[in-house]
Length: 200
Image (cartoon, rainbow, N blue to C red):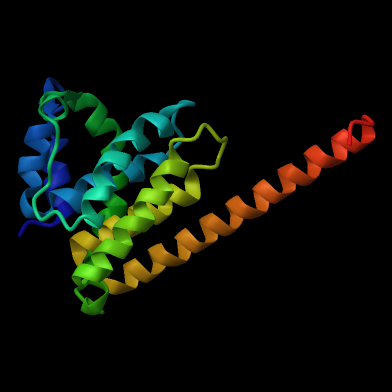
């Protein structure tokens, strides 16, 4: 099968017109689920306007549960499949991601295949679901670690590379640790503020 980077280059070759989500899904074939997870997660690693992570994270909330359910063929609502994306937007965003993807593909190979058993795929999907819910929250810079984790996990699913999956799991653990610590810090600050105001 064609490398993911080659398909992306073909999809982003034109800088005019539009592509439907259905066309993009067809281009990736049986790897569409993992590929779309990557396509919606990876752009969050780039400097984007505020609120972009919420827009990009919403499809992840729809897609990632399908891994948990063991869906073999990607399902999309008809309206979602018919929605279009500007070719110029695809070129602008994924033109910056594709060179990095090509470097990863050059050193990647299928390994640690036990991580991609039916149970392993469901675990991967469950983590992506939880991180997707974090990604859609409007937290400044709070989207970077979840986006990196989902990008790594979804890419490992496409490439069947267990080393990339382990990196994704490590990023996910780091993301949740940072989230818990940040939440704890916010609660402490809130309690301290109430104490100073004589309200606690």
